[in-house]
Image (cartoon, rainbow, N blue to C red; front, top):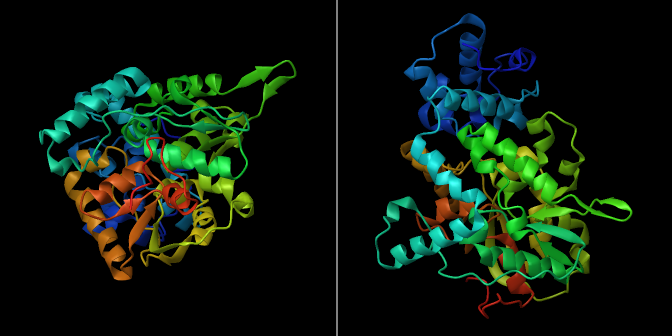
Length: 396
């Protein structure tokens, strides 16, 4: 069967196995078929030798959390993430990938009005105790104060689920950007979804359509031509997706060069933020995979946080995935839970007051089992004395 893979990319892997210790599914199962090396070998067998795409092979591909921790560890620079995304897309096209209910659930992501309305209904259901706790949802807001444009130095990408469920984080991020001297234009409904969740699910056509919409919406022209305004995001998954638009669309699109994780953008400007008394907190850093392994700008989180908290501590698990992985925690609940258990053990070993995580999926996944998580921007905003638009300080 044609998995539509680039055979040159597929053959880069020399099966050395250096990826194995960094793969969360291999670590919790010990199964070769649930390792990057094993999955690539199965890709070769299907693509090059007409091996059947049976249930065991599909399970091997479906159980990859797509953390891409294998990529920095690979001496041959195998583009594993791109290979797996293409395999997932092929499986979905063949009716063996994303289930119909998931595709239906993703429809509102491109419709902000529908997403906010649905999220408010879900928030009401939570308060009526109609939402199972096993879903791991943080308490959702019933209403959301709009973000205000304060200038045109940067676009602040607000996205879909994060904007509907965690607008407090956006408020904190905007406050910090403004404190560093930048005028901010929140993207809001003009660019409602980057397509990151669709990439995880193998919905490649949907992701490409969304990518084109985002590029069009955030490419602004004036009398002098196109404005190359930076695009800042406080979601690691969104940043990774948008930085990959050139590969996704088969172009060398300059748009991706305008995209910055908020910590990456702020790190060179930390000295412009007010000097304040650090928060009396011991903070553990949990690096989202798409910040550490894909964007590879995770050190910037430390650079931004360091002046504003008493102590930063590192986990001893080499950035192992927490098991969230987009919809992975729902589709592969058992494996996701086992991966999360290892992360929780690493957190407990350093006994922090709070865990700083720069991705909404990670924070919700860890918060579902009682880990006190917070976005780094909320900590910085709290240290600077800012409150949210409704007058509350960022959460303790």
